Length: 253
Ligand code: XBP
Ligand code: MG
Image 1 (tube, rainbow, N blue to C red):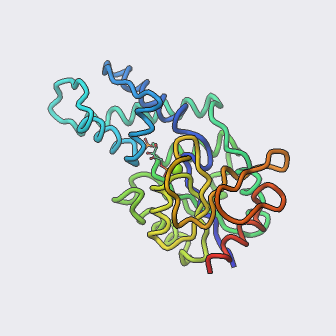
Image 2: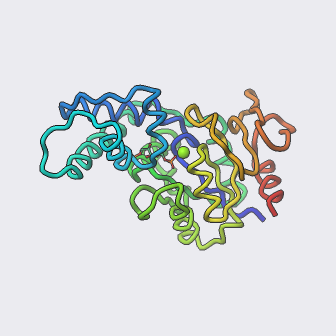
Image 3: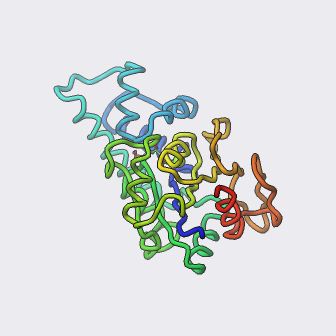
């Protein structure tokens, strides 16, 4: 039986990257007097590197932007990232970023049916908590029995570490879980940890290679707003519900 759903956050629970994280990075650069700017296309390329601090570091190394003379570059990266997280949380608190269609419905259905919930993400823990609280209420972080986020593991996605960490915290075998992801890096991470995966690509990941996923659907959909199956079995009712997730999970066995 399908025991646990483990959700990715950015791109999966919500479209956070283009109008959330990207904007917050740019605001942090500006606040620190850096003339760096990540436009929509540049940010799409930078997303190949998971983790905000790692992304900034990569940008410095590969793009060679104008740098202030600082004795310690990693301290600058940390300073930018602290400021970026503050700005991102403010964006969330202003109600700028909602959940993707079907996410709240599936979470509530899972809770009612005794299916356990977890989160495996690269982003900072505070970002996850505030996203959930702002969209689902104050008690919602506790809906998830394990939240694995950010630097809690040494290697970020596509390494399996974060999924292995969450499964260990839940005390479950990876094969009794289903991961829901939006990106190739997320898919690779979950598969490397032996979890079956449903992919719901987001605005930045639509053209990625999702070989190894059980199915690829453009979103979870809603009764009034059908989802489109990009690969996998047709949806009888036009949207993903727990019965669909159970059937998908069983098809992996
Ligand atoms: C998304 C990421 C994150 C965010 C930024 O990962 O790669 O790095 O873009 O978050 P996932 P931080 O889809 O696995 O959630 O700046 O807090 O790292
Ligand atoms: Mg993601």
